[in-house]
Image (cartoon, rainbow, N blue to C red):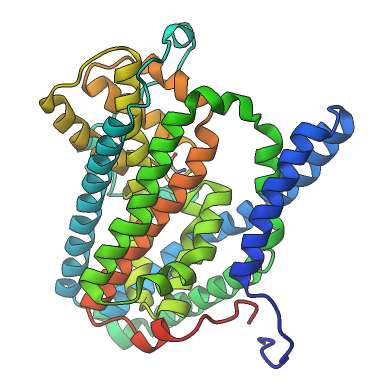
Length: 430
Ligand code: ASP
């Protein structure tokens, strides 16, 4: 099935995606500044061709998320089998996720306090602008909603947490029943293989999809809006970069002794996918596949930790929220007490759990963090205009955090094949 026979030198998927990213950004900027507006530019190119091809690519990936998460989780928990190991993996993962999120917010608060992005801002512009409705997350309900009332309802609406609970439960029962339920277990593992093959097939179109998504975004963004917000953007970007390339890599090396450079290189296509689509959820299939094929992580682990992380672990989002809190406080001239800072760390961690892995939701849950310390939610209007680009960056960090945790947990459980991790990158055209 795979076409590995040809010795012809082809560019690897990472390289092709990287080229598509750059070309898309350049193409988008050219369209924005040099192509005269009108029917051809707006309707045919930007909202026609680029929109259909770009969003078609995201949809192809999204279509796999629910069946893939369900099947691979059933298979994963069935293969692990005993509830003790599953429990250990679950607890380790959740602790890791919570700690990295708290670290991310603290880092963001530190960087923003140093750069002081909001000092000297005029707040007048924000005052009349309406803001997305504040979302209040009730912790008790969040817990209760993890248990599906109707699994088909949860599957149909793509609610990850109830799907995870039901799938893990089913996997444990299948393991318990053993041969008596072999038809069902074979069905799930074969269906899972089909989903993985589909992921790889769809990824062949990634350079085109990425090009169109990025070109469309840049075609719609004027850089003039960025100028007054440069310090805010710089604070978010610096904190995201430190979290992604320093904190995570130190954690990875510290816990596993694996080579962080290799990790980043192999994980790059997933980061680029998250960057161009701004959705952690749609990134799940690719992330599981990359961790398995390129890093040697057993699917039993990643099929559990990746969907869980895409739902509850949003370190990039909490970084944006941490910086936004400082920015808005400074813009409105409100001083934050040490106890307010602690409240921010706590509520942003909870907000990260409540943020769905789809575009722009981080901005909505930000209102909950602002309200917790009495900051005006209207402040969100200040950062709304430039959030698109930051959403792309933070989504890449969100998925990287999930992958680092997965790699650490897999290594600790003895479920990481080091030979695969150390091997040179597999050409993704396979
Ligand atoms: N777009 C982000 C994600 O999917 C969520 C957000 O911060 O808006 O991870």
